[in-house]
Length: 374
Image (tube, rainbow, N blue to C red):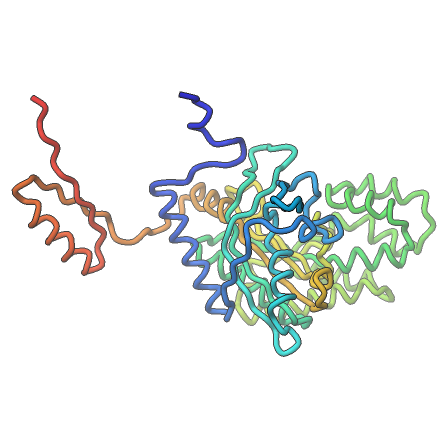
């Protein structure tokens, strides 16, 4: 036998037994939170036309997609990211001009990471998109909903770090930085390299106030008092609007009583370039990557022919389960499995008893006794 076919390829794994059951229970818990906020479930295809995830959309690079061809020669791609798929479907099916559309989903994503580093290439994700609403209330709602989902999972110690892409974009626009330098600057800030930022900007003439803020971006993070500091720094600059929006979000988050789980990071940027405003990520112990991530994307639906301001987020279930396991937070899986063993003479009674127990909501397996081989 070819031993290779007994193993999974690198980056994917089997989930079975108790782990699979815990995963299903966790999925149901999180779906209940989404439903309680009024979100309706939607299913989109596992693969779509390549253009849905093309470079102009702003999702992951083409080299990280799983691509293949159909019989007609069209280039298709496995879904790497739910948001473009939901944007496509919403653009086609929902009249977002009437009232905001609230959609939720659960499914798999596939990313062919160039450098594996222990990351899975297939992940289960559960999330939501709020389409057709530009108000700060929408940003606050998805952040409150994501926080509520982590609490529903059993987590107690975690942090939702919130930024605003508009803060960085406003600064580089006012500084009149060219696109090539802007991308280098983005990477330096993303990698928390203030010395690199200072060196890169040393050859540019710009407002000293903007230069100061850009070199301090990697340290503009922390509790809500950091927003006061950013507000003072941005006097007379358009970037102040981004700070004010974060302040408004904090007010609403306090209404939900979730402020202890929230912090702010004005240096937060995303590899997904479709984000246009507020972005956030959720972190906790026991997971090397974010367990939740999301933000605002006001131009994405325009790629599919229908402009609509939107915001959303996703919970990466595998990262969340790893965190729960390492923090020793149990996931109760419901009724214990009962086993009824029977022989030939007790067969009818065993089936009758099992049926009665199942009618009471119990889980029962029937196991016939093996005949002795002596």
